Length: 382
Ligand code: NAP
Image (tube, rainbow, N blue to C red; front, top):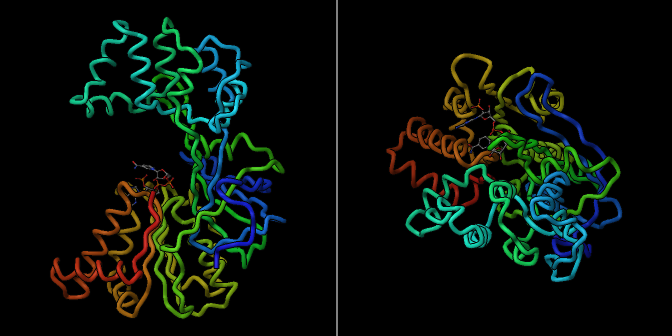
């Protein structure tokens, strides 16, 4: 039951005070993955494990300053906010609009204003050059185009009209209300990288990691995910595959299954780069193991040896037992990277169903399709 009597919603987000901002990765890690705890006290908000939290982030003030400067403005000029109401340019750029990835309208408006000074952009905006344009845009942000064309005069209203509304980011919830009342936890990898000579920051991940002080409010709402629920029968075994931040909902599942005394067996596959630096929630998962909640726990640390070892390699190593669990009715969950991991895990699952289940490739495909249909194979990938 995740519907609530609360008046808070996506349209009217709850200002949830940030309670905890803790680094999960070690000093030698290539990543900065963090654990956040937000208070829902007094909100009346409820969620189920498997749900996500929508976070409305504000943009980086430094980037806003750079854009204001590039527009030859002061920031105090009045423009239309995303709700149509007038507000100062700086405030609109901070809170209302997406100010990183350029929209098609922005590129077209810039090309028109730059004329012969931007021949490449004009060329790439031809419909038949879409593929080349996408490649050219990789890692390019609005500020790069404004900086590269300082002679372009962009009236503020015209510029604002080319911007998209700031949209909330959804993060898988990493806690259970039954174990952590009036609280919501997140597991978020801070996105920071270099391109075209600038440091780029993921809007919401760096907002949470760097720009919200402890005790300050974060505008949030609950995004229900009915397709990523625990089995209704608490005695049903579950298999969870969650490398990286994909482990977040499985921490929530384990909390929930412990809090409710669910008797079903739980098997977790977790993967990250290095055992010493990137073992997210190590103590908690080992405690779940000690308590008998986590029946099986297999880890794959990809960079601890010359050859990459991923979660699907561990699945393959334990193919016979994995098949036994599936055959006995286990529900299978996959969370994390969509582009590569989820596809490879799916291919491994096919291979296991073929080899262990004695099925042809086509029969395995039908079998897995059926698992999806009856909601025994569920994915939350991004
Ligand atoms: P992550 O980048 O998914 O990494 C977690 C673990 O998964 C690492 O040990 C990584 O190994 C491994 N991994 C890499 N390719 C894999 C594959 N094909 N199959 C199975 N495991 C694989 O973790 P994260 O830090 O949570 O990622 C944060 C965000 O970045 C996510 O949104 C993710 O989708 C995104 N991301 C996307 C890409 C991409 O190219 N699509 C790349 C990185 C991150 P190695 O890193 O040692 O290979």
